[in-house]
Image (cartoon, rainbow, N blue to C red):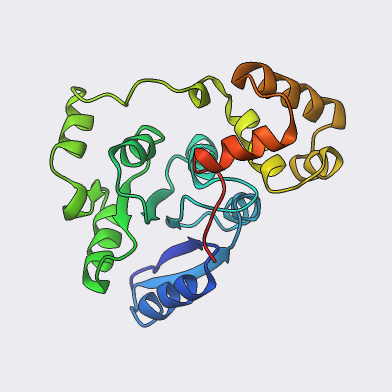
Length: 220
């Protein structure tokens, strides 16, 4: 008997998460081994379960999908990651593949397309939804297409981006320190670096910046 492929779902929208489970559970060669509704929980549980495939939303609370993608690929490069996103812009697609995503599918894809995306990624192939493919993936693979001109957010480190997201979500320094297992002084240092790099001078400005750059999920 063939060993089932283990799948982990990272999605903060419960209805969509339940829909994915309902779609995949009847398929005999797949097994859902876990789920998470925020980025920090996702990393912790994926480290434990070590699935074959992660279905990953990019707009997540506490830690963005991009951060989850980078951390998991750095620690467990053998784990396949298929991004499921509402974002269709070149910027999101290219950033996902630069972070070593194995596939990128749009959330309003048909069930058959999502099944095809999952099969392709598990077989070791790159996948991108047909509606956004074209020159985006071709250019990325050939090295001819580059990301748009760097914004001030590109100067921010991965850790600073995580702290910016948490600050914008209303967490206090002590709470952030506890979540990320670092000291309050380290959080304060990162916060000061963020304000300096972004030329922002208070928490409200940091929050507005995070919203403008899509670091905060606006889903109901």
